[in-house]
Image 1 (cartoon, rainbow, N blue to C red):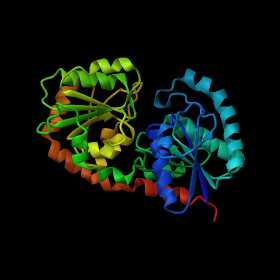
Image 2: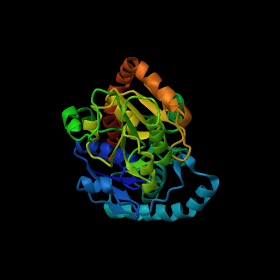
Image 3: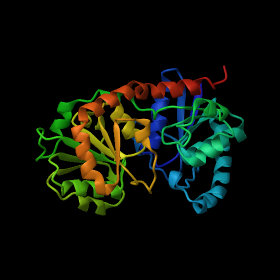
Length: 351
């Protein structure tokens, strides 16, 4: 049994991790999993795990931030990419193709359709929802506009909803290991705030770090991620700020964190829920996108614009115990999500 994942993005962040976590759950069922990325993707996450991948064109229009002009330009590239994905299906001969997010979902599912292979779309953008719900079975993640539809409406679209699939091992970190890696000046007696916009550090998140560093808030401010531009490092001049870079020991770090300031999307909010960490979602970090995840994780996630960050963070400190309790209500379902999605894919394998 073989499943081919067609994955959008650079192969280093949340899209790739989504595919990898679902694949891990499928492998427990004896399924062989292979991956396809765009030829321009560095695939660092896969390299780290010793995984090779196929190369096939996977155009991106910008996801939630896609304009009509960008989508129009992407249409012709997508048509060619679908033919390329179809050829890859005939070469790999998968039992099921899983198209993962945005361009990966569209190219993967349409390519599978042309190659007459069953498929499943993993959806988060308006574009992938619009296209994939017309051609195949899908799972809508919380960032998708489909996620908050009623079950009856989703059934008509041949779609189920699920939390983002995380690696269950994220909850078994080691606080002492993280403490040993803390830079000089870190004060374990103070609250610890983690800032992250995922594998890539965006400017607005870096500006949030600077704003808090200049405030009266007494806390350790930890920052992770590979900056989109090196100039963003200039925002980290406060002695309260500790920039850790792109790390592979996040599960240990979570054991130190009291509040996580992250974007209102993706893997890190789900990981925080699994670890019972209160979240402040900084809005508009990634090209102005908005996903309303405070409504998905009620009472565990607070939202804020940049100018109100200090005030909302203080609210999170005041209500920390209640927010942790609310996060714990979602933890079990988040931890089981990868297995639930894997079961859905497994059911599509011809027996």
